[in-house]
Image 1 (cartoon, rainbow, N blue to C red):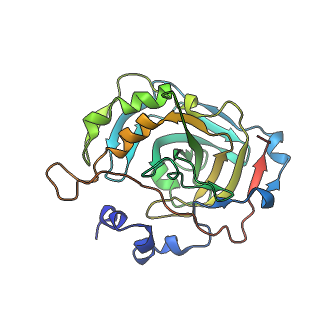
Image 2: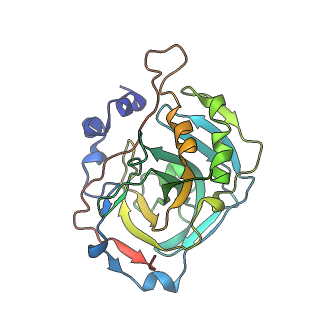
Length: 263
């Protein structure tokens, strides 16, 4: 059975085909703010990033969401919990059927309307994202929570404008107008961090998660555009609306969830 077919059957069945999904360092998790560990050492080497606005190459309907692939050769993420430099590989989004759900991580049990993930790989130690994928220090993902506001988010709107061209699975559209990943990030870089996993198969436990505390605002119209994507190919019975694509939270277990800065 193909991985994409397994994804369609939902997270509960993933461990049957992907052993890592049964691991003790799975993501996402619920952030219990009363139990996080404040770590001043994270401020000693501030988290920094650099992205080129013209790095975004294309957007694809994967059948379980949209994904923007980038040329991250000139990108750079370092500092904070990271002891190496990481390059941007792609970014994608998770959402729910209404504005009360959609984020993968939750905060004190509260879900947000969506969550954006910027996926980076360790370019100091590995030669490609594929090589880094299965290494414990291979990936770093920035998580940005969505709140619904009255206005469109300008940078998100650039992706929304391409949705009609990627309505069905495997459809792909080149990006001709620059999209700046830095404009997705909150102005105040306060965050939580912990060791975790990919939130989709194969659920490899190779991710340093950096989840920003401050959400960004998107409009309901923008989320509705994401929900209008189809899970299958044209004229396929599987071409249903993609109303939700998030994995439920998993136990934190004995991992330490550290925080940097206050909101």
